[in-house]
Amino acid sequence: MSRFRTPLKNARGLGSAKEGLHHWIIQRITAVALVFLGCWFVYFVVGLVGSDRVAATEAIARPWNAVLLIAFLISGFWHAQLGLQVVLEDYVHSPLSAAVLQLAVRFACVLAALAGIFAVVLIALGRV
Image 1: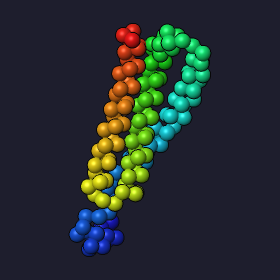
Image 2 (image 1 turned 30 degrees about the vertical axis):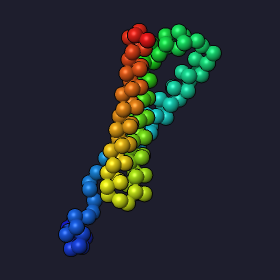
Image 3 (image 1 turned 45 degrees about the vertical axis):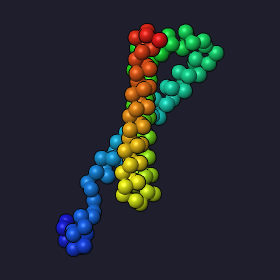
Image 4 (image 1 turned 90 degrees about the vertical axis):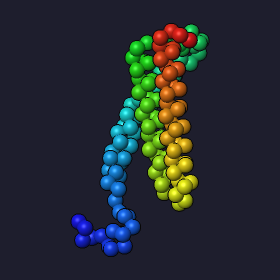
């Protein structure tokens, strides 16, 4: 395999980082999960149309709804982070800006997912 690399690529360390396939597979898995979880979420929200706050919190507090809502949050924010990572890799060419933006996107996605999960857990435990 090394015969296909030019001496300049060897010197600069350019070439495959051996992470692309894993990233691609995870993005596809989260996409498929989001198809099913998104359909459930739309069904869930449409069922809550016209409900008051008490009925909505009771619906979220049901174990299956809470678990599916947490799965929706995790897969949604994970998928978003992976997609934004690709966009930043393709369109941000300054190494410092790219690193700062990648870190900001990952931090924002993790923070938002944790906030959503925390809210669902509080509702499910009857603390809200």
